[in-house]
Length: 247
Image (cartoon, rainbow, N blue to C red; front, side, top):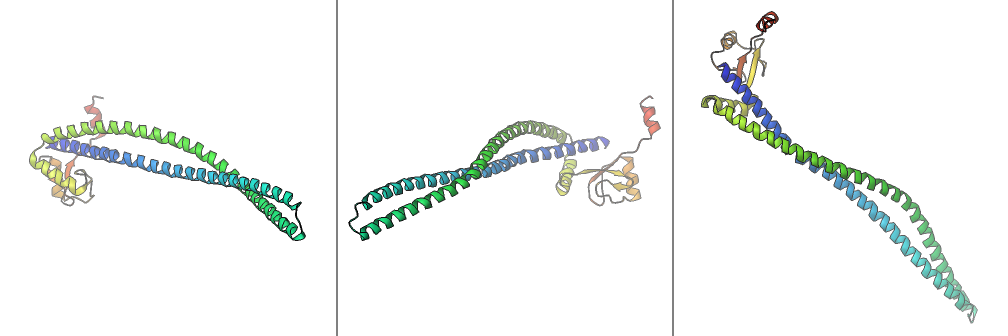
């Protein structure tokens, strides 16, 4: 019976290890997806900053072109104004010239405003691009670690599953049936040590007769409260332990 308990304990340890490895293997891709999502968010932000700066430069170029057009138009109107036949024509030319000059000033004011706005945009974009470059490097490094870690986990998982299969094959079918039933109920914790007259899992006090029978170790016993397989590990006195080691 002691041998069965040892094998069940070994089986439980393997199952917990297998579950942990499976959980890690399934979690690693999610971790990569999360950091890639963050990277994508930062990339979109940088692209938005680039687009804003590009729009700023485009508008400034358009305004500079408008100023050239207005300057040429005003220059032409001034020449034509010199040939005005009467006051009415003169005032019409003057009105057109004033409108053109007003448009030029409006464009110039807007260009100054855009230049003021572009300075922080350029600074922030350079910082964001630098940070994004470093973040990409870190993400690639993290992905490489995940690939390596996954390969290690999968190898260990295969070894643990092979060992579990071997252990399970040496246990009696009825014992395996009970083991699987309890494991399903308590999510992996099948075996518990009885100490101080209590079940080490649910901490419920054992009946005196039950505890006495458990100490004999000649039969497989289940906790009357939680149903887990119980075993008794008798304490060893310090002096006796030293004597057993020949000290």
